[in-house]
Length: 288
Ligand SMILES: Cc1cc2nc3c(=O)[nH]c(=O)nc-3n(C[C@H](O)[C@H](O)[C@H](O)COP(=O)(O)OP(=O)(O)OC[C@H]3O[C@@H](n4cnc5c(N)ncnc54)[C@H](O)[C@@H]3O)c2cc1C
Image (cartoon, rainbow, N blue to C red; front, side):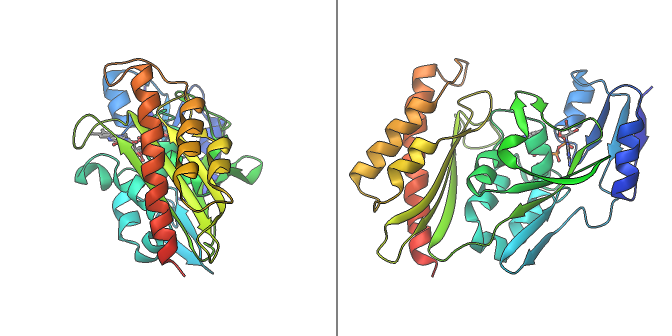
């Protein structure tokens, strides 16, 4: 029989996960988990609902950096003006998930830990150098977002562990991010390709720091160092964009499916990376 626990502290939640006999699943918004329960794809013995733990939901700003509680739904993330100003790419990625109804529930932690290669918020979080705060029986640890997903449906979290928050660093001036995805329909579909770019510019408009991350073109989101290297040290000229495009294409290891062939996905990855970089540069130029 499926058991349900709704702890009110992090410690209680960790005890419930650690003490579970059989498979335990954390419940955040439930927009992936409940679908999987109904279809029989997930058959846990225990569900640990973390939404009753105080401070698990909400966005807090601390000296220009941000803490996003693990249970914060996309709708709340989108309403935080300071976060939208500092990390527009992260917010637009979070707000692309599903519909208005889904936005009322879906969280960044669920999007990450469901471990879909096409998860929209993951490339943007990695481009932002976001850090997860993970709670477990041995206390808390900080883990870069890119170290959480190990393959489709798999994470590096221990059975007693769950994410309690995300940290987004303080933005330097002249820096911004952008996330774009390509889907066959206008909404409510899974990314054929997602691209997140975060850049910092010097006063002359030359890129001094960049992160480029692709989604849906490999088993996990790809942090493409060569694509970032094509941008760093240059203004956004044709050479930089061509180098970015080629590096993005080289990194892809996509699958063929009904949404797109391997060749198509590889080509679209270059195009999405170019477009996301152009938006990130434009935004960065406006942020003093
Ligand atoms: C109609 C519909 C449209 C969708 N559209 C999109 C879309 O456009 N883009 C997209 O990326 N996704 C989409 N999704 C998938 C889903 O909405 C997202 O992945 C969402 O962000 C999941 O968050 P959640 O809080 O609902 O996760 P849940 O369903 O609560 O959990 C998902 C998984 O993560 C684990 N988990 C949850 N919270 C934690 C935590 N704090 N620590 C550790 N593990 C945790 C759960 O155990 C479970 O395995 C869609 C889903 C539906 C039903």
